[in-house]
Length: 278
Image 1: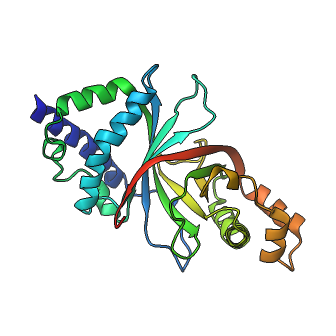
Image 2: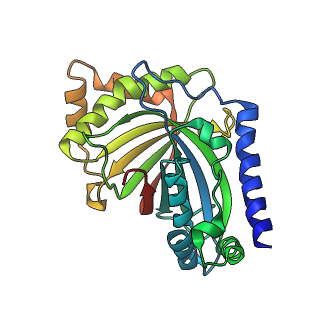
Image 3: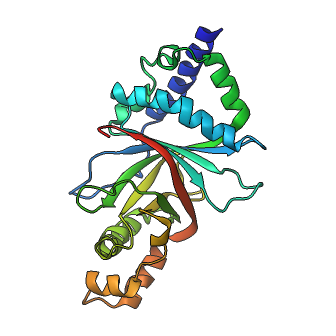
């Protein structure tokens, strides 16, 4: 029974990720000449079942984290994060998110290659792990994202605690306009925010799958904060004047608003993580 479940688990993951390569990557992967190192994020949205939020978190921290560490040790992934989505209600579609990071898109084809859950978990009953996981949460959706740009202080964002995610919807045929606005207008402004200490990083991600202009968003920008007190402290006027001293701010804002629709913002808190070279 245990071997059957493990094999079925691996086959399911393999089938889903193989579809990515059968279809080919979507065009939302444009990058500048000085492109950052490739980084893909498999974002999985979780809704905990009533009364089981604590059990779900415990399963992730005490059991699944060990499996993700094993994947890091084998070079399959470079990181895994568990986030709590703040300010959700019982009828919201999800309240937790896991993000698995890949530096090599080819590893997406079989992201659990040669991982034997029974070997990693030892005396833990693998069948029970899968059963209890399904009881505590429902995975309501997943996205494959591609990091396109970022600004971090020297040494990276460190052990950031909170993320503010801004979901952007772009009109068909206007991807370049939006991308250029983020890179030419907002990337320098976020660099000034980091210098001023109002955040510890910023990044731009493109949605690879599912993709299409009929969806609710095509891009996400992420602001990184080391603590809750940092949120909302950015001085936009000061940062903009330093980043664009000779520009008309009203025209920059008009350019921004014309390039995309800000669909929504979310606040995520890091609950736990495992990273390569940690």
